[in-house]
Length: 80
Image 1 (spheres, one colour):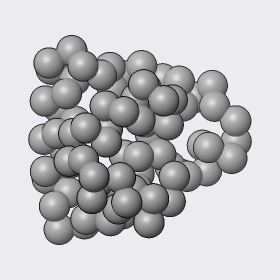
Image 2 (cartoon, rainbow, N blue to C red; image 1 turned 180 degrees about the vertical axis):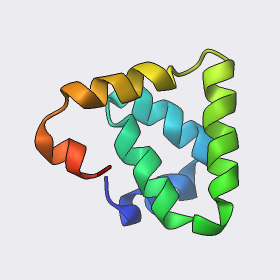
Image 3 (cartoon, helix red, strand yellow; image 1 turned 120 degrees about the vertical axis):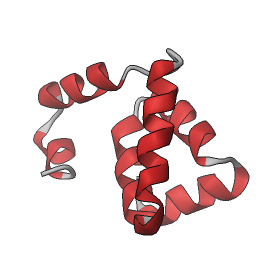
Image 4 (spheres, rainbow, N blue to C red; image 1 turned 60 degrees about the horizontal axis):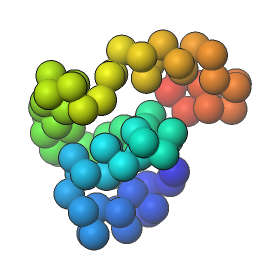
């Protein structure tokens, strides 16, 4: 997901909803990456949103990053 696509999503929904939807759709890490690139000034908010979603049991951040190890090289390069 590119930065422009993330901005389109967040115009319709807030960041938490975008993160939840991407988690269900299987492109969670791409959304996290796009979010971190689009709002560098609000990076603390992204961290807070991720922690809250994880603590509420709505997403499992640990498994998302563990799955990254199993992802194809093209996906892994996004986070190198």
